[in-house]
Image 1 (cartoon, one colour):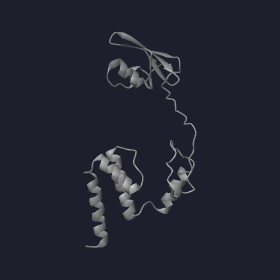
Image 2: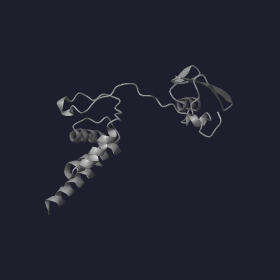
Image 3: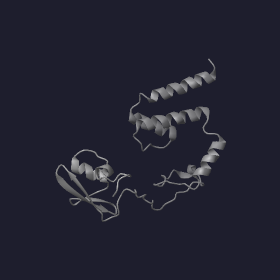
Image 4: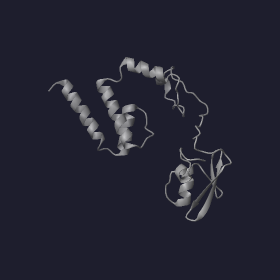
Length: 171
């Protein structure tokens, strides 16, 4: 058997073994492969990332041209929310952390603060006041209309649909 064939078989076996691992084992394997702990507990994501890294190590990563293009696209789009952990000199001097406040995109379906939304549900009228950073219903402030709808109904609802604030509806 050729060396290339045995290498491909080894990678295939390693990747197939990922599917039998627990999430904890996948997180440990991720740490081994990337030398950085994972903040994710999503099995599918962990398997995909580890498999990609194993293949990239063995068969080569992105081409120089693809890397240059990626760096060009990402140059002005640094969207890091948290600063990186101090990992010493291996980070390199070319990396930078941008700090500041993120502009929260306002959903056009949300009425202006002060608006009172009304909904009759099972014979009872419910009033919700739109606040600058949430929604007030019966003295409690909620982060989303879906949370308000769930408090009213006891089950999950799309808040915009529950209060009739879908794109095509009149306000």
